[in-house]
Structures are given as structure tokens and as C-alpha cells.
Length: 224
Length: 118
Picture 1: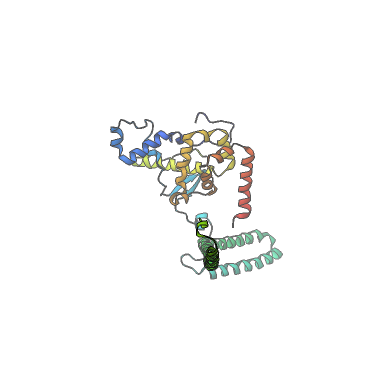
Picture 2: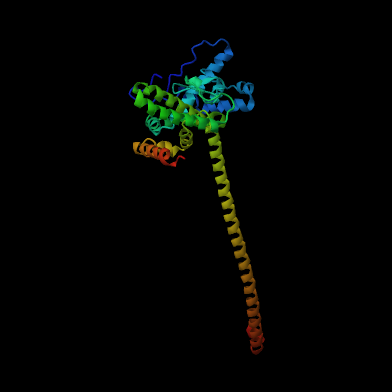
């Protein structure tokens, strides 16, 4: 990256982009269509400084961690447990009834708060310890609540999809309504056309009769 | 972008080298494609004339693979994928050179975060 402008706060794009010339992409396309042997037999040369198949996207990372903007991310997205964050887990492990555990924790918080008030009156020095305990309890509650996040996400998605279906149903109804209106209009038009025809035929008849009557008066040779 | 350092342990077999290369490339492109979520970065690219380079435009087209589900799950700045689509339009690229337009986009992005996200 010799051409990097030092004064710019922004990085240059990866150097790979220079490989994506029309020529190279065309070569890759032909190799994929006809195979590499046909390609070299036709007298074409592969690029010297890189493998032509490097023009294809890299495979997604599947193992452990990957780095993004100097932070490590687990490939399989999962929540860290309390112990991984060096905190004591106050609720039992494994399958638990989250709602009742949360209620228990909530009761503990209230109880500890009352105790804190008591301590502040009798022995204020022990106050910070009690605060730490309450903090741990609240963190535990937050962790339990966060385990509901995937559930919440699914519910939200479900709601969105339901809304979309509802919208589509409404749209279909609207279209159906317009279609019916159109059919009605067309039918009306057809009927009025028939009525017109009838009127026209009657008119024609009267005209014909008038003509034939008058034609009798005019000598035949003058008609043409 | 970080300096994309490879893992410190030395790869032993050719396949691990290829894997390491693949993973490095994956991470470089993952970071770059997400840089596109920043209107000021786009403005900077436009001012440096990258959008006049046919190879770079081809590269942007190629980067659309990040919109495939197996890749998109790695993206934490989804605006990047939206801008990637917009960048396929030459007029958008041309207008990015103008700082006022970049400001407008940046503001729109801010209000999107502020209001329309639910």
C-alpha cells in the first residue's frame, strides 16, 4: 500500500480489487464454462501473480473465532454464560423455570434493599458490600432476561410476517373489488350497446320505410 | 481497518495455509464491505476517483456475495449491504463526490437510526 495517503483518515480498499479487470473476469468465466484445459489450449494465459480462482469469494469461516475491526467474534453466535464473565451465577444451572427464578431474584433484591437501609442506619461502613450484592442480583436478572432475546426476536418476526400477510389479504380484497367493479362496468356497457343497437335498428327501420315511401315518388332514373 | 494479522501459530500443512489465506481474505473483505456503511468513506472513495476504475466497479459487483445468507450473518452494519446495492448505480457514485450529498446521506442514515428503527 505504497500509495496510501498518510493524511487521510480512511483506509484504501483491499488491493484485490485491481485483479477484477474485465479481462480477468472474462478468463474466469471461460475457464468455468469450458474447463481449464480448453482455456490453455486456446492459447490464453492465466494471470501470473495470482490464482484465477482467487477471483471467487472466500469460503465463510466456520471455526472458532474471527476478527472484525480488531475484535474477536465467535463464529457460532451464542451468549456468554455468567461464569465466562467471572460472575457468580445465583440461579441453578440447567433447565429452570425462568419466571419463578426471576421472581425469587426480584424478592431477593427487595429484601437486600431493606437490609441495605437497615445497615445504613446501624453500620454505614458495610453499605458498599450490600450494594455489590444487589448489583450481582440485578446482573443475574438481566442475564436471565437476555436469554429471552432469541424468543423475543422470533415473536417479533412472527408479528411482522402476520402484518405482511394481513396487508396482502387487504390488497387482494381491494383488487378483487376493483375487478368486480370493472366486470360490472363492462356488463353495463354491453347492455347499453345492445340498447343502442335496438334503437339503431328501429331508426333504420323507420328511415328505410321513409326512404321507400319517398322513393316511390322519385323516378327511378334519378336515384343514381 | 485492522492490519489483518494472521494467527500467530505457524501453519503446518498446505491446506492450513490455504485455509489461513482464505480466512484472512474473508476478514479483509468483511471489514471493507462494512466500511461502505459509512457515507464519508464513500465520499472519500469517490473523491479519490475509485469509482472511475472499471476494476473497482467489478470488485463492487463481486462483493455482492455478502448479501447471500451464509455471508450476511457476519455483517454487523447492515447499511453496508444497502449502500452496496446503491453503488451499482453510476449516478449514485458520481453524486458521492459532492460533500453536500454525503452530508445528506449521513443525515438520512442518522434519522433512520433515530426514528425508523423499531
